Image 1 (cartoon, rainbow, N blue to C red):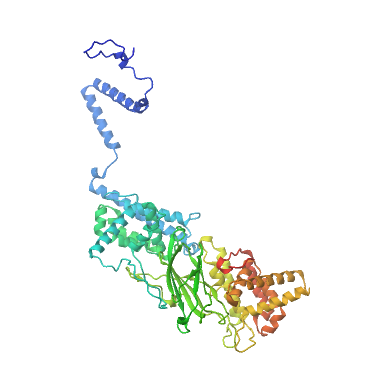
Image 2 (spheres, one colour):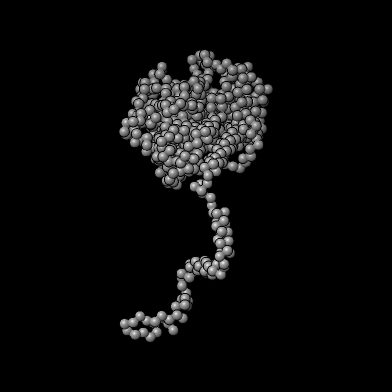
Length: 630
């Protein structure tokens, strides 16, 4: 019988049918959900029935056992423990965090220092296969756990970023009310006019400004991501310990956010924690630059011309192009008479070269540039590119553009939040004008032993570069074209014993190479070829010299020599060319008898040194061989 089929009288409540009510529906979506509850209910009913059958003594015994069992299984709470137990439990946790911080910092330093750490006695720490990014991510997780310990109220996904936001809000509120001085806050100052100053305008460093940099990056959406980016930026600027110390110096805010037993309110442990983080200042991290590769970075340029030789009368329109490990800018036109400018460009990575030149227009298109400085306005990294050469027709080697190779300046430790200026010039790579012109007044004074030593050191630097793990390698461009690089060393070798045909005429190495090219091309046309190997070497040499001469760039004769050396190193031809030039009759006319290139013993030694580069795959930066398709 179904519900509704029973008999009932109008005006009276129908009689309920017990057989229908005791039977559940055939299919009910709630049946499965309620099954566990039904079993628990039946179990309680069964226990209750059994309990009713017990006498009073047995019932009291089971109740007492249930109470004891509940007290042993229940999760202990701090509110149920004595103050001494609470203190001991919390102390062990704080000690654990501090120990983990110490181990992580040591692990990261050993990983970063590589072989040097093994030499210092830290070889017992096995970190093979652990990437730097993994270690930094692990450090960020540790910081989040430290900042989450003892919170009054959790706000947001990242406790560290939440604390930073509270600090930023407090500082801005105090600044607005006038109760806080502006000495520690970055304020956009008016850009100075170009005054040919050798020092960049100060870059103020502050916790608030670094937070703004992170907040302006649109690619980072979450609080956790912003906190990690801020940690990476602080590590790269060697300010992580100092920033966190400043953050925790607001004791009122810390008391407001954290309970008394929190790690951040344990003074001794907090000081040790900051001290461990301070050890990161001993190594150079690029963990922000190398990760956020697509963001826009503001770069500040300072061009320092010679003050003595008419730099203010320069009339041409200059331009500049900056290259880094991650990319290269377009040609940036510099307004006339402006030596200092700021521009935004996609992250270039660590900077390597600067190309600078002008269009040779106006009445005085001659420019003597001492050096160029470029600073990343987010990370604060400042690079110096020495020049000390003329740019202009009829001056020096006639170059209208030059490729400058620079290096990162060593940052100075700062105290509190003072304006950060670039380091003193005496600590940067010295602006030494390379002895590229040969005349009786400026002949190189290096002897053959010193020249051999410089070439050996340059080649040894390249060999060491390739024997290092890839993450520990520096700039190959600096080893090739820097002031102590391979190009400079070979330049000295070719200058040794070089004759000067006229008193007031500068003769360049490239003049000698062009004459040698003409000689070998004439031999080939007359089919006076001694042997097949010699023929191939001569043909390669002539092909490279011709391609460089046909390059539309106005790089000057010394720039052409640099390009030839770089291409020869790339294609493993330098030792062949040295042997070829040593046997060339042009050498006898243009070099004195004491010249290095006319000494067969020294030449053979030089060839053996250069042959060691054959086993390495040398990749050249685009700026070094721009315009050459060979």
